Amino acid sequence: MSGHSHWANIQHKKGAVDNKRGKLWSKLSRIIIIAARNGGGDPGMNLKLRYAIDKARSVSMPKDNIERAVKKGTGDIEGTILEELTYEGFGPGGTAVLVEVVTDSRNRTNGEIRKIFERGGGNMGSSGCAAHFFERKGVFLVPSAGQDEEYLMNIALEAGADDMQRDGENFRITCDTVSFSKVQDVLEEKKISLALKEITQLPKLSVDADANLSRKVAKLLLLLDDHDDVQNVHCNANLDDAAMAEME
Image (cartoon, rainbow, N blue to C red; front, side, top):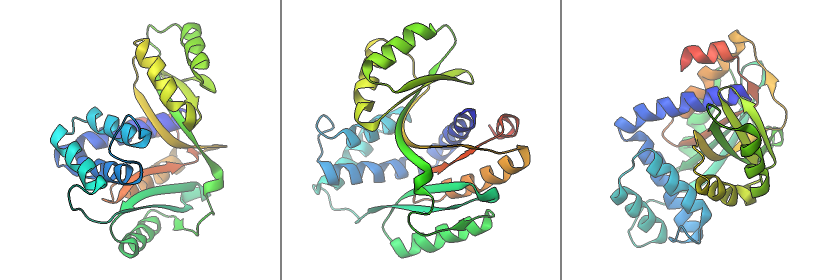
């Protein structure tokens, strides 16, 4: 799964640049609005909202921006009508790709995402064509330096995690989405440093990509990720470490 870690690192560093021009905050505002609209404005009772706010805080999104997004979601402030969509398709080498978006115009976004797939050497497919290659999971990356592997594994498994594996310079802990909140709380209570915490789509079976294919796939993923409506991009390719390190 080191390919997944490299892609996460690329997204994180790209996000730092996006943040400077407000692009990332705008994307996160949309997720907060959707979460508050669907589950209410109390993050203590709405886990999806809690995750969205945690992510916003992790990139230093101002408190006022977060509160404004929550109020738009609950209807206390008038806002644009948004909807969540997932597009599916295939990238270079037949790699499966999922694209999660939040949009105020389904038709516009549909056409633009289709064009990006084509520009990146792939093609957008119909609903269901790629989703079965993935499963929704909670993921935590814990820096391995100075960390006792057995101690960490015991904590994670007792909290409800499914598995823990070494992933490059990190330990990767996975869990089902129902257990995510409990695992997060336990890790934080134990003062375990987290390099990443997210609910994401993990491939059920990864496809190894050589350096050349990895660069082509990464180009498509970055093109998709750069779209204003795109929240997350997932791929079942296990990207080549050396090729991805060049992009980080």
